[in-house]
Image 1 (cartoon, one colour):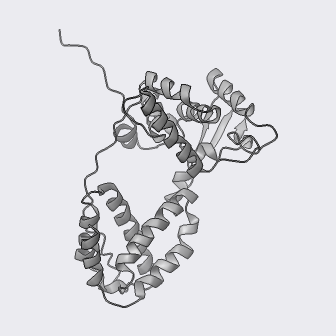
Image 2 (tube, rainbow, N blue to C red):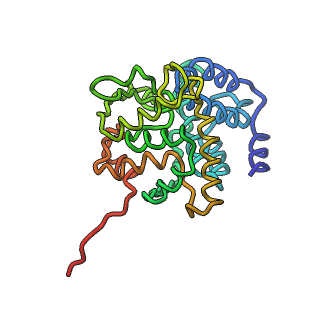
Image 3 (cartoon, rainbow, N blue to C red):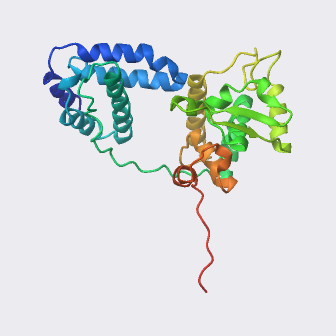
Length: 288
């Protein structure tokens, strides 16, 4: 794959036009995205600039983009699709700032690789087995993810000021990254949710702005949580308490599956909830 990408790079010109587009995109657009998205797309931009940075925007044709997408998609179909989506946004930006006078986005006609929707459903027994081996902080984070159905980033950044009389007020970060008005929702309290919030409060030795925090009151980073989660998965697999790993995000899918209609997750689209988050097998009665 790397040899093929290098060959593709050699076919480009020595003109620096796209380097300016990438530089301005990093300065003008990337900072407006959620921190986790900006970090991920920053790495993707490095990959794209390695291949297309020496080209002038008008010289980039659909077959160049398709070749890159095909090479990257040989063993990384999802990554290739995400990079294509980002590159398409970069080229729309190039049109906006006058670097692509034709106004024709060379990415617009490229068909995405087929992606298989993730269908991993966490059984209650698996969840409980992993929970038993988790740290106190991770137990709270897991339980909040399951009870509220919210993303890890929204839970790590959850502030005590969001705990109000009528429930927990969330302003979902991911909706902001898509250029839309942030999706706001309120999760009402239940006895279980109040119990988990109480347990979270007992884990800090002093005042903190955050619900889930280190013992000194400082917040966790998403990277730190991911590292701790990977250690927990490795430990659980070695101990034999689970036979297949699952991601932290799979807990959100479990919440959406167990919730019934999945509206708890905050997705407005019923199609998205059904396609991505309904993973629990349906049960049917036999005909006779």
